[in-house]
Image (cartoon, rainbow over all chains, first blue to last red; front, side, top):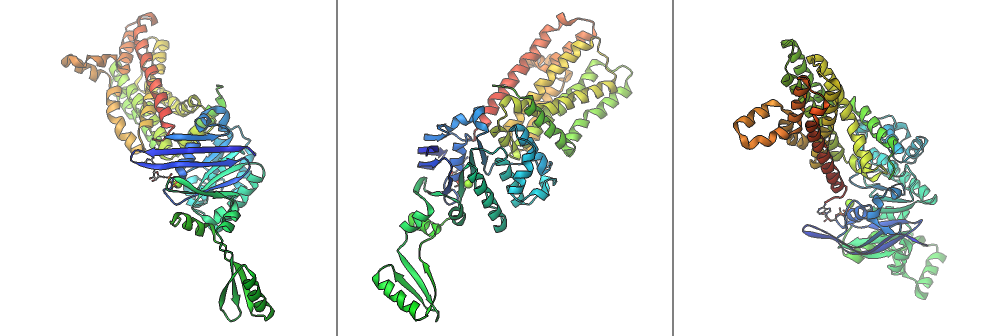
Length: 282
Length: 237
Ligand SMILES: Nc1ncnc2c1ncn2[C@@H]1O[C@H](COP(=O)(O)OP(=O)(O)O)[C@@H](O)[C@H]1O
Ligand SMILES: [Mg+2]
């Protein structure tokens, strides 16, 4: 499958520091790609470079097969949507009127407003003035705005960072729905759980480089020590290895009715991140 | 590149909706009116200087200052970024963002002229010159709005600029004493007042070409500066 984003040897220096040193990855058309890293690791910087809001210092950042600087050409504007920390809404206007303006700018029918508001669980609030919304609601309106025009590619910078679990889940469902209809999603987060639930592939960004890139499940297997934990009815926890010895022990516990529970000790993405980078997320 | 009037109107429509709740803009817009009422009542036939003191105030407060505040607010609230990333072109965004201030300036000047009782000897020439001048002040306001980070900063920065471009004959009086300030006579506000005085003395359009041309040069230069600054602002530092 062709790549919708290609990043090679990407470097970004700010006046006194290097934000991105040597970043390499590609995003395939149709996938949900998670770009993970602790704050300050350069996630937002990468999104800004990819959406023509920031110039790279060096390296290649191609989107739709052209350098991202070409996205300023009119033909590309309707092909992508973006949410970053510098997205804003008109505070004195209603939710509906904010989205209406964007329908007009993107040549989208006003009917679409109700659809996107339903996707972010905000339909009842459409007549409310934006200044009266909570932070989470604001984020959801901005999110709705990014896919108003059903873009081919969506850049989302920490889309659920100020949402409660119920609304996060709602957003996740909405994003999966968009993805199923063909939208490629490039998503940054420092929430490993979110990445695991949503992303087909994830990249770990740390110290200006992509440290690891793969499917979450493959990563978990790769970093797994192949042990299982058995919880016995008396409360003891036994660690079993995935071998003949282990299977014998397991047979004993199962046949004598001592086993209460069993689970694999595969690491979470968070565990793997700490192992690879020696650094905690957040 | 195709020009879409629909996008321009969409931005204008949004600004109109916003205006009714924007006390800051509404009060700035009303400020020249008390002065107009005062001049209109104290003198049966106010001088050209009086008329243009009011008109310049409308230029400075409504065209430049309101425009500056509207642009600065789009920047401060991060809404300009959304417009920049949309399919709207630079020209569409800047036109859409200027329409409200242009309309408000025209309204304020018409009301002021009615209040001060200004009857130009040649309505067409004066209306044309004022209309061209409006574009200079709109461009000036846009430029200052793009250069500042917040509405507060914009209010501070516009003050000296407004004194320079907002005052008429006072500045000219200064040049008599300080010859090194003679460049002042080429300011668009001075040229406009000069034109208005000559028109009142009965000259036709062929005699005021030079003033119109000077004002037009200011408009074009300001617009170029706006576009260059805007393009720079599209990319973060
Ligand atoms: N405009 C800027 N000027 C200077 N330094 C910046 C700028 N933007 C980001 N940085 C720095 O670059 C690094 C990466 O920032 P960012 O991309 O925002 O990280 P993240 O989104 O992963 O939290 C940080 O150290 C940050 O301080
Ligand atoms: Mg960030």
